[in-house]
Image (cartoon, rainbow, N blue to C red; front, side):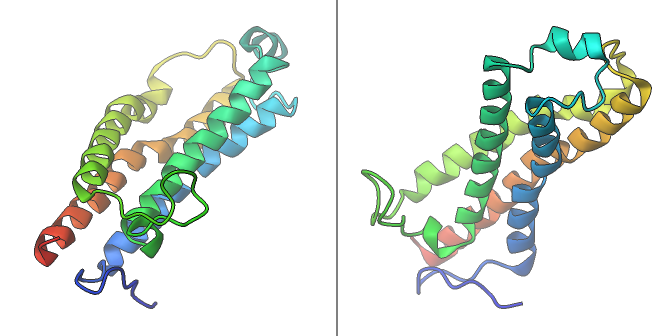
Length: 173
């Protein structure tokens, strides 16, 4: 595996940080795919009445697709902490393209995101402790396993953020 070289003055990210950033981008996929199946009309573990009660049709489907897309796009931002496009924004980005993001702003935003994700998604580690009457037993188990990777998103982002900060401080940038 090759190391990613960012700014010449910055040390390259360690292999573990690159892997953690990629893992953070991948942990949203299982639940996102499951939600896309719901939007496509599959009950995906819900009972028929439970599926109808959740409102996954019409605007509900748009919401579910948007939630899946937003989650994956936010998770992909973690890669910017270890990739060159996170040091110099691509020119095609409106208003910000071609600029270097402020490292303090990036660090604070990523740290706040990591904290919010950790607090908000830890509940999925306890999925099986709460009854889900609108789901079949198999669907409840399947949904629990598909959402379980989200628990790792916040800690992975936190680890990559700490490495980003460490490398920036080491370079004096």
